[in-house]
Image 1 (cartoon, one colour):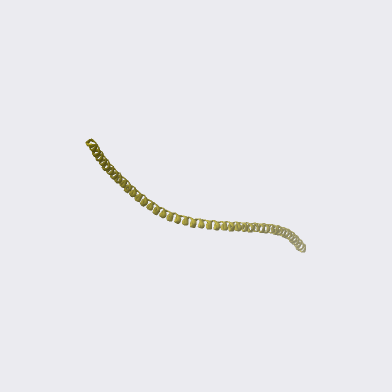
Image 2 (tube, rainbow, N blue to C red; image 1 turned 135 degrees about the horizontal axis):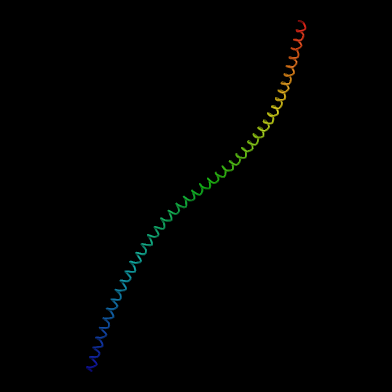
Length: 158
Protein backbone atom coordinates (compact mmCIF):
# COMPACT_ATOMS: atom_id res chain seq x y z
CA UNK A 1 0.00 0.00 0.00
CA UNK A 2 2.77 2.21 0.33
CA UNK A 3 3.08 2.35 -3.33
CA UNK A 4 -0.53 3.35 -3.54
CA UNK A 5 0.03 6.05 -1.01
CA UNK A 6 3.02 7.41 -2.86
CA UNK A 7 1.07 7.36 -6.08
CA UNK A 8 -1.88 9.04 -4.38
CA UNK A 9 0.41 11.54 -2.85
CA UNK A 10 2.08 12.21 -6.19
CA UNK A 11 -1.32 12.43 -7.77
CA UNK A 12 -2.43 14.90 -5.13
CA UNK A 13 0.73 16.85 -5.55
CA UNK A 14 0.36 16.87 -9.35
CA UNK A 15 -3.26 17.87 -8.95
CA UNK A 16 -2.20 20.64 -6.63
CA UNK A 17 0.55 21.80 -9.02
CA UNK A 18 -1.93 21.58 -11.88
CA UNK A 19 -4.47 23.56 -9.88
CA UNK A 20 -1.82 26.16 -8.99
CA UNK A 21 -0.66 26.30 -12.61
CA UNK A 22 -4.27 26.63 -13.85
CA UNK A 23 -4.96 29.31 -11.28
CA UNK A 24 -1.75 31.10 -12.23
CA UNK A 25 -2.60 30.80 -15.95
CA UNK A 26 -6.12 31.97 -15.25
CA UNK A 27 -4.77 34.93 -13.30
CA UNK A 28 -2.25 35.74 -16.03
CA UNK A 29 -4.97 35.34 -18.66
CA UNK A 30 -7.30 37.54 -16.58
CA UNK A 31 -4.56 40.15 -16.28
CA UNK A 32 -3.98 39.97 -20.03
CA UNK A 33 -7.75 40.24 -20.65
CA UNK A 34 -7.97 43.15 -18.19
CA UNK A 35 -5.04 44.89 -19.96
CA UNK A 36 -6.70 44.38 -23.33
CA UNK A 37 -10.03 45.62 -21.96
CA UNK A 38 -8.29 48.69 -20.47
CA UNK A 39 -6.50 49.30 -23.76
CA UNK A 40 -9.77 48.83 -25.68
CA UNK A 41 -11.56 51.19 -23.27
CA UNK A 42 -8.77 53.78 -23.77
CA UNK A 43 -9.00 53.37 -27.53
CA UNK A 44 -12.78 53.69 -27.32
CA UNK A 45 -12.43 56.83 -25.20
CA UNK A 46 -9.93 58.24 -27.73
CA UNK A 47 -12.25 57.31 -30.62
CA UNK A 48 -15.17 58.96 -28.80
CA UNK A 49 -13.04 62.06 -28.20
CA UNK A 50 -12.08 62.17 -31.89
CA UNK A 51 -15.69 61.61 -32.89
CA UNK A 52 -16.76 64.47 -30.61
CA UNK A 53 -14.06 66.69 -32.14
CA UNK A 54 -15.11 65.68 -35.66
CA UNK A 55 -18.75 66.38 -34.78
CA UNK A 56 -17.75 69.78 -33.42
CA UNK A 57 -15.75 70.54 -36.59
CA UNK A 58 -18.66 69.38 -38.76
CA UNK A 59 -20.93 71.73 -36.83
CA UNK A 60 -18.52 74.61 -37.42
CA UNK A 61 -18.25 73.69 -41.10
CA UNK A 62 -22.03 73.47 -41.37
CA UNK A 63 -22.37 76.95 -39.80
CA UNK A 64 -19.78 78.37 -42.24
CA UNK A 65 -21.45 76.65 -45.20
CA UNK A 66 -24.87 77.93 -44.15
CA UNK A 67 -23.40 81.44 -43.98
CA UNK A 68 -21.90 80.97 -47.46
CA UNK A 69 -25.22 79.69 -48.78
CA UNK A 70 -26.91 82.76 -47.29
CA UNK A 71 -24.30 85.04 -48.88
CA UNK A 72 -24.77 83.29 -52.23
CA UNK A 73 -28.54 83.62 -51.91
CA UNK A 74 -28.18 87.34 -51.27
CA UNK A 75 -25.74 87.67 -54.19
CA UNK A 76 -28.09 85.73 -56.47
CA UNK A 77 -31.03 87.88 -55.41
CA UNK A 78 -28.98 91.02 -56.10
CA UNK A 79 -27.89 89.64 -59.48
CA UNK A 80 -31.48 88.80 -60.36
CA UNK A 81 -32.54 92.31 -59.32
CA UNK A 82 -29.74 93.80 -61.42
CA UNK A 83 -30.74 91.59 -64.33
CA UNK A 84 -34.35 92.74 -64.06
CA UNK A 85 -33.19 96.36 -63.80
CA UNK A 86 -30.96 95.86 -66.85
CA UNK A 87 -33.91 94.39 -68.76
CA UNK A 88 -36.05 97.40 -67.80
CA UNK A 89 -33.25 99.78 -68.84
CA UNK A 90 -32.77 97.89 -72.13
CA UNK A 91 -36.49 98.05 -72.84
CA UNK A 92 -36.59 101.77 -72.02
CA UNK A 93 -33.51 102.30 -74.21
CA UNK A 94 -35.23 100.52 -77.08
CA UNK A 95 -38.31 102.69 -76.56
CA UNK A 96 -36.18 105.84 -76.50
CA UNK A 97 -34.29 104.76 -79.62
CA UNK A 98 -37.57 104.04 -81.39
CA UNK A 99 -38.97 107.41 -80.28
CA UNK A 100 -35.74 109.12 -81.33
CA UNK A 101 -35.87 107.42 -84.73
CA UNK A 102 -39.49 108.48 -85.17
CA UNK A 103 -38.61 112.06 -84.23
CA UNK A 104 -35.60 111.98 -86.55
CA UNK A 105 -37.72 110.69 -89.44
CA UNK A 106 -40.34 113.38 -88.72
CA UNK A 107 -37.58 116.03 -88.61
CA UNK A 108 -36.13 114.75 -91.87
CA UNK A 109 -39.60 114.82 -93.44
CA UNK A 110 -40.11 118.40 -92.20
CA UNK A 111 -36.66 119.39 -93.45
CA UNK A 112 -37.35 117.83 -96.85
CA UNK A 113 -40.72 119.63 -96.99
CA UNK A 114 -39.06 122.90 -95.97
CA UNK A 115 -36.37 122.31 -98.59
CA UNK A 116 -39.01 121.70 -101.29
CA UNK A 117 -40.91 124.77 -100.10
CA UNK A 118 -37.68 126.80 -100.15
CA UNK A 119 -36.87 125.50 -103.63
CA UNK A 120 -40.36 126.52 -104.79
CA UNK A 121 -39.92 129.94 -103.20
CA UNK A 122 -36.51 130.30 -104.81
CA UNK A 123 -37.97 129.38 -108.23
CA UNK A 124 -40.81 131.88 -107.69
CA UNK A 125 -38.29 134.52 -106.58
CA UNK A 126 -36.10 133.80 -109.60
CA UNK A 127 -39.17 134.13 -111.87
CA UNK A 128 -40.03 137.46 -110.19
CA UNK A 129 -36.46 138.61 -110.51
CA UNK A 130 -36.47 137.57 -114.16
CA UNK A 131 -39.72 139.46 -114.71
CA UNK A 132 -38.28 142.44 -112.81
CA UNK A 133 -35.13 142.31 -114.94
CA UNK A 134 -37.25 142.06 -118.07
CA UNK A 135 -39.48 144.90 -116.85
CA UNK A 136 -36.39 146.94 -115.98
CA UNK A 137 -34.99 146.25 -119.45
CA UNK A 138 -38.30 147.28 -121.02
CA UNK A 139 -38.42 150.40 -118.86
CA UNK A 140 -34.82 151.16 -119.74
CA UNK A 141 -35.68 150.70 -123.40
CA UNK A 142 -38.72 152.91 -123.04
CA UNK A 143 -36.59 155.46 -121.17
CA UNK A 144 -34.01 155.34 -123.94
CA UNK A 145 -36.71 155.65 -126.54
CA UNK A 146 -38.21 158.55 -124.61
CA UNK A 147 -34.81 160.21 -124.34
CA UNK A 148 -34.26 159.79 -128.04
CA UNK A 149 -37.64 161.30 -128.72
CA UNK A 150 -36.92 164.16 -126.39
CA UNK A 151 -33.57 164.70 -128.02
CA UNK A 152 -35.22 164.39 -131.36
CA UNK A 153 -37.85 166.93 -130.32
CA UNK A 154 -35.38 169.33 -128.82
CA UNK A 155 -33.21 168.95 -131.85
CA UNK A 156 -36.13 169.85 -134.00
CA UNK A 157 -36.93 172.82 -131.96
CA UNK A 158 -33.55 174.20 -132.36
